[in-house]
Image (cartoon, rainbow, N blue to C red; front, side):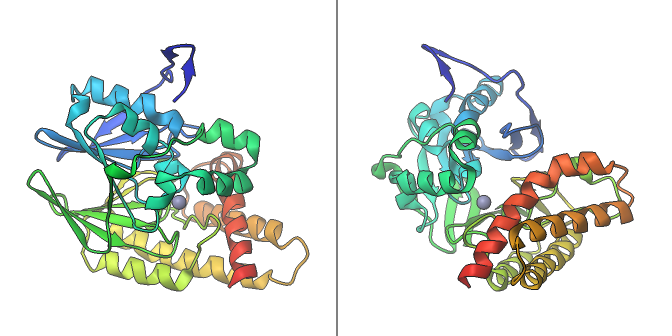
Length: 324
Ligand SMILES: [Zn+2]
């Protein structure tokens, strides 16, 4: 949490959108507006968060509870889809503020929430010290007595509302997605890709797989997507970013982009500067797609919105090339 002396500093902007059926999308304000979200789910007196944002996002989440007049005691569960810090970095700090909350986490992620030192090292390696501190603001361990591991097909009765947790490999080995029976909606973390509303004005949306180091696995990813689609979801709640209802279109596009990424990585495998070449190539493909689909956003703005993602994706693809 950002603290100055004893005073908690609330980020100036708190953006959240009520999506109906007790679901609220909250902008966790990672770097800019519209990059990363998390979700508050309410069922009568019970509340929970799916993903948390980073440690810097905690004041935003608490402010949303306050504005929605939800007592902190009513938050029963924190459900990070996986333990990457833009999804789970706020978990430990948030649990300190929410006395009754239990953590529901993928079995492979549990130990990293209890002892976040490895996670911290991993993120430092990817982002470097300065960017890590600014972006994620540190990590707080979770008390093991408050941790529940959600194995594949773990079902939760969320105050009469059924939530189903599915192990979804491809982006990370510690990733689950959550199917909400009431809305026939899927909380997909990074498994159903990233698609930014600012870029979705064209005929077909831009959606891409975050291939962040170090677990990218295209074959496993296709299987996960197939399994998610077998539930016939009516909507997906993406962390990056917001609710989308054109699910079959997104699915088709995302599968193609995963295939394209894997092929691009292979193509540059033996080149000098392969990581930079991969980054340039996947960025150019995204720009071409957006221009073809007449998204109406200029190239410089596109670059500023997804350039950072493409660099990170190239890092993950490079790692995959070297280790698969
Ligand atoms: Zn991730």
